[in-house]
Image (cartoon, rainbow, N blue to C red; front, side, top):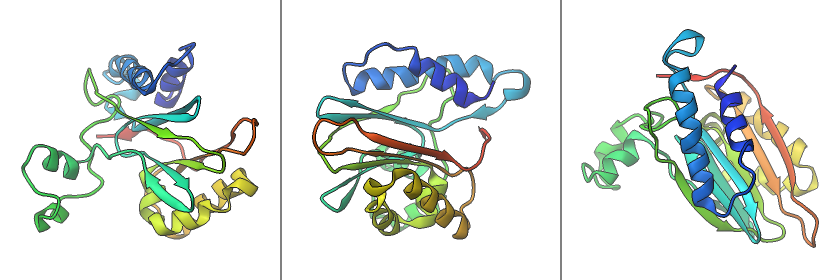
Length: 212
């Protein structure tokens, strides 16, 4: 069984979520399932970055571990809802470097300090964002957003409400053409007007678990 299946099964087993903290606890619980699985056998040494989002009334709850990002496109502006669990941010949080310190750029931007399977316990990041009619939410792996850049991603997401699946395919193809390195995963959720439920489209352009 792949790590993605272990994580999905654990989240889907939760009948009801009351807030973003509950979603974060789901990911922490998933890690406790993943941790023993990656100690032996074919999954030994593997790990996974993850993000999850679910609509709670007029809000979108978000939880993540690693550098998978969730963005919200609202009123034509792209808003980052997550914060990478990266080596760079870790140095800032510990007071080792200031955000404007030029030495920060010498640290590799794709090195992460948290992931499922990296340690026996993990603290996911959580956030709660407004969910308004016309909003577009996107979950994107680092291979997708790093290769495209946020301006290009925002421009492509403006076409999502018309056809979320086509938008996902176009983002994936554009990332490939720009030399994306690693697994390209894109999830788009469009919030329509009125009482209709959100439309969603998902694509994972490659399979495989991340190793450390």
